[in-house]
Length: 113
Length: 110
Image 1 (cartoon, rainbow over the protein chains, first blue to last red):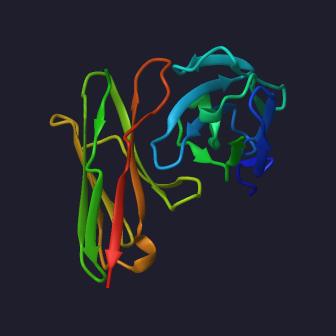
Image 2 (cartoon, one colour; image 1 turned 60 degrees about the horizontal axis):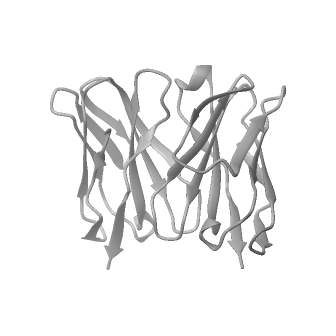
């Protein structure tokens, strides 16, 4: 069974640009979570989508946004990139309204110059 | 807030046993997870506890005491490849995401 997939694996952008990251959950999972992990730091919760709706949002500015599609895949959009947005962006998925174990994708490493 | 506390760093010797502790706030508790994360990689699921007691999975075991708000991850017969960060995460009731601790960086030395 395929795990969570994310694209792209690496990305380099300049300050002020916009970026879109993509995530496909494990088949049968309806919940998708996005996390940011800056170098050497812990996981910071960004967004949680379930059944196409935003269930919860972390303490991030509105330039971080996303959506979930009918096939449960998800996008994370970051506008007006800042240097401190450089991080590993992790997507995780789980089943049954977020009540099951979260499994993580390999992540997208974003570097903002 | 729902803080998860775990030690920042630990060092242990190859072949030894190490215990990584995690404490959390008990109100609304609905399950605890342990993940392993190697540097630069994604976290991988290790164990899940929702009832009191010990769950064993090969060299790894996880223990939970709900009344004390306490869990530990026990790693036996340590190998060099066990050098990684170990994340404790708690699920609380309600429409809330998992709350992750900052992780414990374990270094296994020869």
